[in-house]
Image (cartoon, rainbow over all chains, first blue to last red; front, side, top):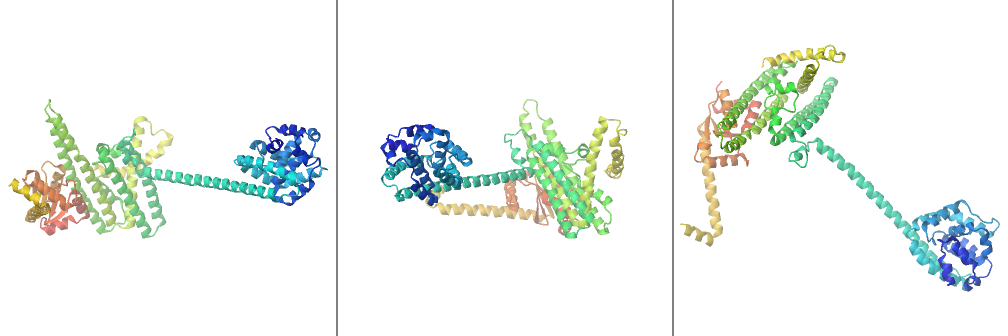
Length: 477
Length: 135
């Protein structure tokens, strides 16, 4: 019973042991005599690594040695000291132990003249950090240690009662326990490291996924959406967004071309930029083709264009012969042979445009005949036929975009690299002015006094001057 | 006759299968020969359909260039379906591809290839070479 009491060292009742010590009726406790066993302590100090055992022995010595009266004098101190000295091994409640450790770190509230206290305090202070470390790591080892320590301490007391100088078996056990604690601490540290690494890797993966998402969105993920995967956005609206992005990219590329021309870069570098710009155009034709499969009317009617652009639209885009004509008139320093080539290109594209327009006219005629000729009662059949005929619209849009693409490629073949760059700049500028014209027109209809508004006046006049020559060209068409 | 066929199939299935394959291949060759014969008759031959608008566009293109073309309306031909299949095989595509044009007995292709050639500037020399265009 006495051994149990000693072995428990119940810190949940800080003054419990205090009370127990007040009843030194156990024979075991009193067997060691009333005095504190300094010999034991010196040996303990000698063996630095086995502080826990020493704490235990000290504690046991304390309990055996000090009469209750002494403890009663400093009711708060002894327990803290006990807790700190015993360290992490005998923590019955982890929080309490850490608190006690921290508090004992700061103060060693004992009679300085007491050799025990001095030695104990020095012992404690030297090992405080290790105590703390062990205490922090020992939270999950409490149970192990609790179960291990109680029988061990009981065994210790019995042994201690027998021969005070025989510490080897105790040392071995404590050593083993300490080693186990170290192992556990190391394992928990490793686990923590692994967890942190896992967190880091998943963070990297997250950023990569976000980048992929951005890239996919910019490359036109709307193709999945046009199938109607739970989104309210129509394919037409998606195409408008795609086109807006394409326009931004267009501006960026044109600025690059302009800077390249002004900086007089080498021909190879300019060629790379020109080919990049051609790919940029190929991209918009591809996207238009994909959208046309879902919503051909949106593309052909030019809902994605500004108003002025829409006015001059031909089968969902620009008329190649018009662009060629504009370039012939705007480009300078063009050789005779090149001009002849461009006239030939214009001629061919005009013939192609004519053919496609006639085909489209025939399609319209056929659809009108089908719908108009439908009998009042049973028009479903005719409607089905008409819908089938309208499916050809996509084919015409495809051919028109193909014609535009081929014209641009042929243009680059005819001209030198710098001339090609300049012609792209001219085309880009033309469309920018068309869009400015549209916005001007919209603001004009909103506000009749456009000339009087200060911020617009300069822009208006210069825009009008800029637009004048290009506008004249197309009045002939 | 059917009785014979059935027995033949039951008795020697592999040979029967090979016989069927050979017959189909011969039919295909016949079709191909027919097509080749047709396209060699004229400098420019268009296989089209009377109701197809893209075929109309192709015809207008050649008309606008002043080229006389021979037009073969497959929907008015008894063997039109088979010829269409042959053309699809020639073009190595699975979708209906009318109109298809041959110049000088050689396959040019569908509308998009024709337009590409025209914009390239290679259509006119081709026509001149085939004798469809003078000047």
